[in-house]
Image 1: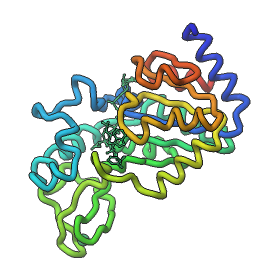
Image 2: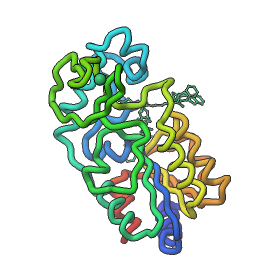
Image 3: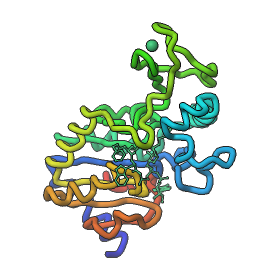
Length: 242
Ligand code: BJW
Ligand code: ZN
């Protein structure tokens, strides 16, 4: 389908939809200047995210992992939500039953004003104690390495879901309810390679939703969705509301 008519089809579905669920990934924040994970600029000191984002990496070298997070905190602190984040806040206001699922940990959706939101991989501005489990907000840039819990002196870690770790069960419940009940499921700016989010498109489709993808490049989701539109999130998402 030609790009303009695919976009028009999504707009028509949006007008009729009673329930809309959206999944976002790093591509939506790329337009704010936050590097994606699998792009060439996703590297840090020649480490790939997969090598640092694991409980084993943190156990082996917590200082190295915190240094990586400090680099990212410094970078993300200078970035702001873009037109795509803002358009999703507008959509949340317009649609009765709306849910936004983001894999992004940069906090740009809540910064834009999104409220009906699951940050399924956590948030870089929160820390969690590895001993007592207490979660708290922390906006230090940079954070003191190594940071310790003010309650029990345990080592703090980022409140982020690493490879091999389970997603929060309440988040997963909310996501599955949002996938089950939506008429329209929009997948924006994710490579569709990390589970369980990578399966959300097929879950929504099996449950009867119309599934649309907006991405700069083709992805493994492109073959299974009803329509896919190639382009930048900051251009395409605001266009949906016009
Ligand atoms: C644009 C754009 C523009 C660019 N506009 N678009 C089933 C099968 C196989 C493996 C597994 C499975 N189930 C679980 C696993 C294991 C694992 C997994 O998925 N591995 C895969 C690599 C195969 N999953 C897990 O471990 C998850 N846990 C779990 O399932 O627990 C139970 C379990 C465990 C083990 C086995 C079985 C079950 C947890 C996953 C947590 C992922 N966390 C990370 C790292 C966080 C670190 C941090 O940020 O600090 O989250 S991984 C990293 O990837 C990050 C992202 O949220 C995530 C997704 O990346 P995303 O958003 O898609 O970004 P990119 O860079 O990949 O893509 C960007 C896209 O945007 C591209 O397509 C561009 O083209 C596009 N783009 N500019 C629009 N301007
Ligand atoms: Zn503690």
